[in-house]
Length: 166
Image 1: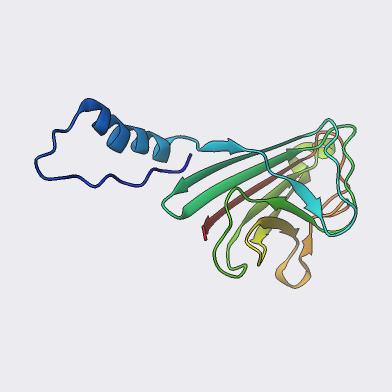
Image 2 (image 1 turned 120 degrees about the vertical axis):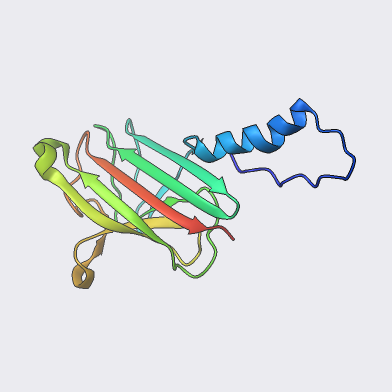
């Protein structure tokens, strides 16, 4: 939930409990709570992936113009991965020209703790999607059906990004 615009107080105004709750308690709770759920979309530069019986969840917290967003993909047995580079929608449009980055983390369920890959999440210049990349700086590749692993049932992808909204 986005924080409300702060109230403009008037000299001599009688402050009520309801006003204090709305202006202080509720906004404070939103800042320290886990944010608001949203449903990201999953697209690609080629044939679209299909979630099937997998799950795709998102959470966001907007404080002023600063947004923290998290996305979690859990692959199901009927999930298909499409072709091309993957992208996930953001809850709010980002400002700037793709200057926001975050983290990506992939888990290969078939090998347990040894099957984790860390990467970078780049906000697209459109400001509406984020793409996970894996590998070193010179050879980083966008997440696809086979990057950073060949995806299968119960594999997971986590993305976190902080950015300024437009």
